Length: 296
Image (cartoon, rainbow, N blue to C red; front, side, top):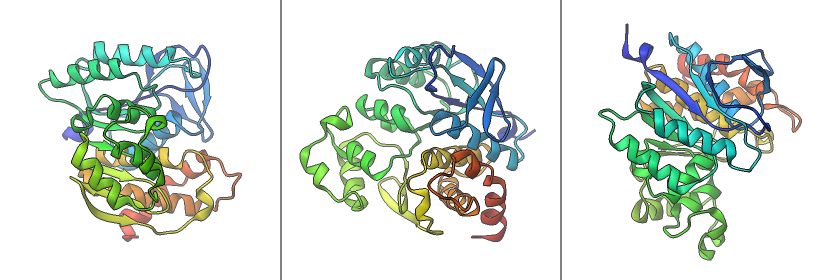
């Protein structure tokens, strides 16, 4: 059995449902919803979209194990987020995770620092990916160098590039004035002043793939303008990349291919502004075939 077949992939993040109790399980996907032991959760944007895209991609990559989802309900009060932090801090060295994705979780700096301390003590740390709220916590706690991949959009990249800000609200004024399309300047500043991972995927009209502070690829085709207002397409990109890495693809290659697959899946969905992210997720298997086998 290959290593890729036995390492666990765990997606961690809250879902915006009040009183949804903590769970660590492998929900299934029925085409619209995630199906848990205790009921269904819409596969909308956020953690649910990232997890589902991860699961679908891992299946296409012939992984023997399905990913796990560690989640809890949180409607902005941080209660569910605290539960997730506490479980990570207590159990991250016991769950045997090969890949750990932190997603929608409130940026609580003290708890992120405790999590980072626990990771540093592990004999072999998991491959760490952060998106959404977890990425804010990573930056605010200044532990980006402990992670392997962050996946900001250009606005979030401006936050990451500010050495003083602990939340986007408190960014330096001049960074608000930078054209967010001017990604090279933001990348240069971030890697000069802030603890950063080896890989960034900066998601937007153009997807920039960054390796150790250098732009190594820009993915901008196919161009599907209708995808811009559809919530969750950045979340699916993170999930696709996670699934490709779980399937044995080198991380930098996975980042480039994930950007391509995400765009092709969006194109195949023939989207309108009313398209839901689960419709795009349903096209991921065909998109993987188009990108990996046909070289799109």
